[in-house]
Image (tube, rainbow, N blue to C red; front, side):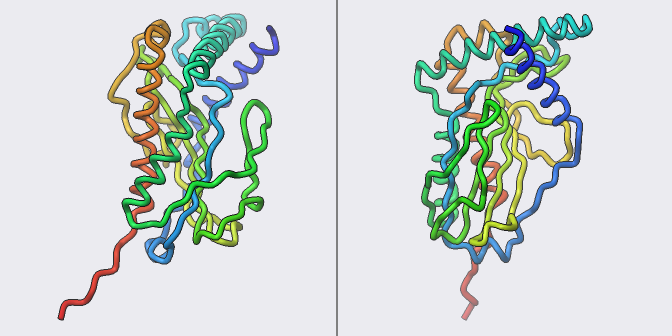
Length: 245
């Protein structure tokens, strides 16, 4: 019990710190480099161990440490409940995100493949060493969702279907990123540099998320689509045109 509460407290603290620091160290992709890239391998991403349910305005937060622990335990319980329902119905948000991103990049003229990668499970999530990646493609795109779920910002009072993700494009040497972008759909982290797409649908409370879990999952799928659009826009290249006769 206390281990689960502790994990939730760490989650809340990490998210709040991540929201306040800034700006994020993004790297804009030079157009001349994008024009040189003909093929991209998009790395497949494991599904979340836990879907986030984070109420930043939880009433327990107003009552000091004890209230914070109560709030953390409540949110941990909600996350477990939602995650179990999503896993039971086969929700696969990260898989959809990768596929939609690949489709959008193909539409922009890249030759795109999806490839597995040696993700390592650690601390309730996954890590990936870039130097372990192998691909014959000109570049490798790694999408790393840092949050997938629902966030209720302070004074907003509703849950936003939210995905936050760090996206890195690597060249063949994999030592220096060509591009690093920070993309969110739904809740927008406060740090400067995040590219955000606002949520079109909200949920009034946790009961609404659970009333129809397929419907709430479909809103997360829309957030995945928004992230794919946002990343593809950053990687849009200028096509060379033939000179006029």
